[in-house]
Image 1: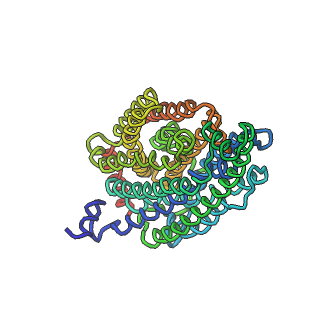
Image 2: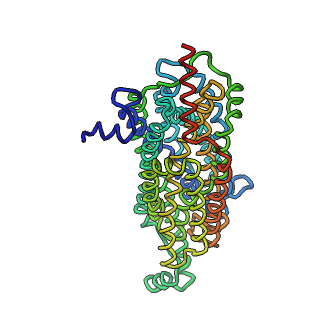
Image 3: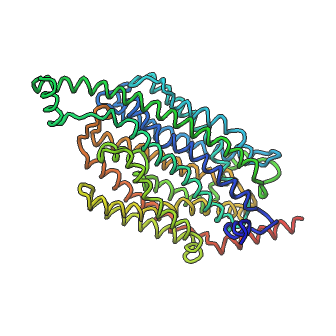
Length: 516
């Protein structure tokens, strides 16, 4: 079988008619670049602030607030603020009229601004523990989040402009979400290995063995050895922090340089076929459309309730690897363990959708995920066999993560058709703004819980000490358990089946034919 025939079979497309594999591939490539940028900021800006700029060190204050808590609140507040900008951006997309369409232009216009703002977030010249530094990064981060939104919302809305065939669209989104996972995975797995390898020489210890060695080598008493170690530790901490600054900065530059051409590739090799025509709707009108789309609102509510379901893959997971398992490179392993289950889930999506519908597949896998995390919580982590059991649990948790990453986008695509059937207006921008809102709420919750769990566990990023290791574990796992079960509840009321979607599309086509 020729490659082109294989691609048509993969996406369910028809040669010479409608969306073609070349477009689906270009769309997916853009997703890789988008996730390079999203992940370097979403996963590592928090660590950059707590570990490289030492806002997570004991005694560091931002005003009257503990440094780590200030970082947690910044991550939460900025992302929530940005999430509620998404409907505004969605409305702007729906108002856009250009020779390139309504979604594609933003891939072209925003690549460079996003790149510049991403690099500014990680400037290595920022002074550690400085309130001025905290304010500057806060401002840059808010600007970055707004600029990123300008490209993120239309990117996902573009999927409904390529085709209105729910099966083809679902296949395209399956491949694009896999591509996005690859992009995020490269950053998530690669960066911790780099930081761990390049900062190993700065690791220090005040163990009894080390003190005894210093006493013997330098002919000093215990107090003298402790004083010596304290001096060394201080210099090591400063060197470690300075090294981390440059590692994160260089990584940001590299991933930005890789991502920019991918945005342009997506712009140049896709075509919008299904877009609204006529007078552009106002923001107020779009909000009214949003609240007429009850099926979409159920998906949004589910997404918000599920914001903490994978919190261990965010900042908290890196803190756990770095300070509890004493090897931040293991964070890459933690996230990598989820991949096999996610790949299996991605391959099973078409079959599961056909067999059980999107709705019940979504519900069942999240109930399953909640059960798996419950077992992990009671098993614990303080023995090798327990870590093995939890590793198996992480593999299984790839199933709900993989299903969710694909299914939600496909269901929102169906709600665009539902809205057109109900009101005569598609509203791709405002509808897919809700998906980006869900993503950002998840990132906000993940970063907030991660940093707060660090504070609750009394981790000092300057000395590497941990006051309460169990607290970190409890927060990360229990928040996931609650979120997994909670997100399944709204979907019990979701009614948009595959059969109903096809009937609506057929009715829409009949209406259009009558108007002609």
